[in-house]
Image (cartoon, rainbow, N blue to C red; front, top):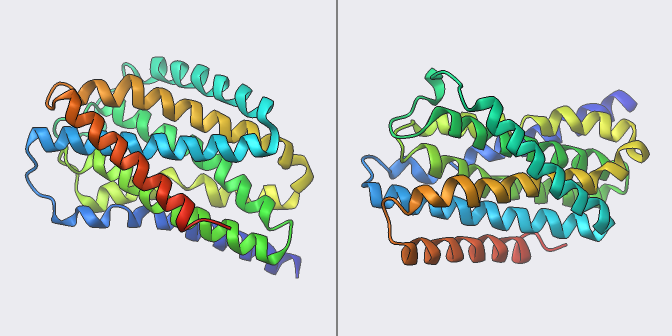
Length: 248
């Protein structure tokens, strides 16, 4: 029974990770994208990431506000350290998409990957509760991962990467979910106190990424007014999605 349950937890978390790749599918219709539209796509990704950060902070604050705020600060420190570590990264074939800095792409995927650790813990912890809670949390994270995969694809596909490869990087960014779900399930009480910190950590890193890396690039090819409109619309759409689709 225990082995069966562990397998269920792992497969459920793996399914949430695979859902991230679905976010790239709408971009199959995109081919040669003008630079202005590429910039606005980046702005849309930024809006989605800001909304995801908002959701992480809200969830963490509901568990432990102080720990969540510490996590946000830790996320800021971690992303600054990560920026230094990848500053001189050599070209990576899988990330060497036309018009995008491989180091920046690596940093973006890295931020989304860190974010997935907290979600994996959330899945594992939920299976330590009622079956209804486990079903809801797993479904919510799986559905939530689709626009996150879209955010990654919006950054990589317009820059020249294939949709399939962008989808693969989206799935890669969510692999910590099945990796963390099983140990979190086995040690629910040990992992539960760290969940608010992990949620804040991911949110802090994503907020910095959007403000310091993504949005400044969009102003080179698009008017700030248009960028602001797209960011606000993307944020609102993601928030509405969270409130309407993922409402418990």
